Length: 442
Ligand SMILES: [Zn+2]
Image (tube, rainbow, N blue to C red; front, top):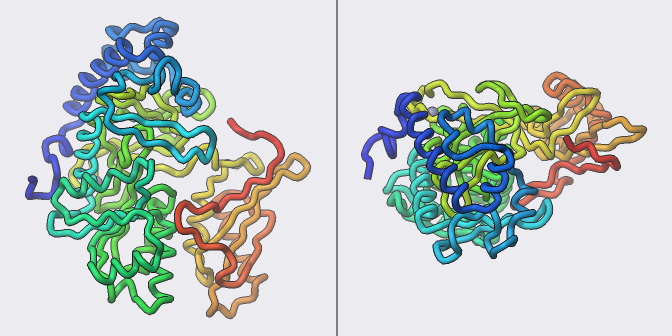
């Protein structure tokens, strides 16, 4: 068990050139393993004219084709239960998670025993990085059913924290547990962290003074990386908020904030990150904004090679003030959520940034996108705080100007409703309503 600031000091603070040597060794191994064991990779590498021995530098990976969610759907169950991307026989697989299927056919993510153990070691490292120690009490308030975030609690347990497997308890029951057991850490979604804090208050429990939560881990939505949202949750709870980021395709969490909250350190010993141009797929430099593409370096059940995540953001590789050299990802939103108004790329996360930073509102919002006369427009619905004396028209005008300043284009309309009008979410909030008739996918 480490005693200092880092879970694995050598790895986390390794000079970049050593880290990249380590990545190259693992990458060559992973590519060879995938080529020899996964029918899909053998076929597509052959078609691209690339043999595993051709991978001599990290950049040689650019010669390999991309995969995406569709590749996963098209190959799963083909040839065998685990499908053509799988590189291990079913008898070596001990766990599968499966996506919600909210955007199509659910995709299954298999793990061998070694994959699972390495995954939980990464979770321990990320929990440690967020400040969790064996003396902490941790309540894991994420769904356990099928969801890849569920098993992450084992990483906290292996770290030595006292773990409470909360799952998706009804709020009243969860608040009872928070009061009775006084845990110090909780992990949930940003929407639910907000909802739960508000619900505590309404039931006469002040999260700041009546509970012991000192750190809130959030994932599953953008909020944890939006300063105004993170600060609002922190203020409500009197706790520090850490953003975590995972993918069902790889690990429940692959990256997380350190105490500086400036990007999420990604487990580069397991994942090679590239950023590519949204349209052309060309690799772009660190610091430039594009689609994040991941390659697993050690995963055996189903190697993931050049997976286009649909997440838009950028990567920084400079050493962090925390001392870690592991790259940081900064995710701005999902490609699927981005829309274009008057030639401006609009990210719902930017709209959230504005609404959460506005005075006189509750912070709840909804975005509606329409395409009347072949022109995209967006409307934003917000809630006025109960104690605000400002007129609806004045508030709408103020919100509209703030949106124009941040997003670059004014909303067609800002609708102001009284406090409590927008339905509160207990899991992933559905904040964007897309009423467009045409297909604008890129
Ligand atoms: Zn850091």
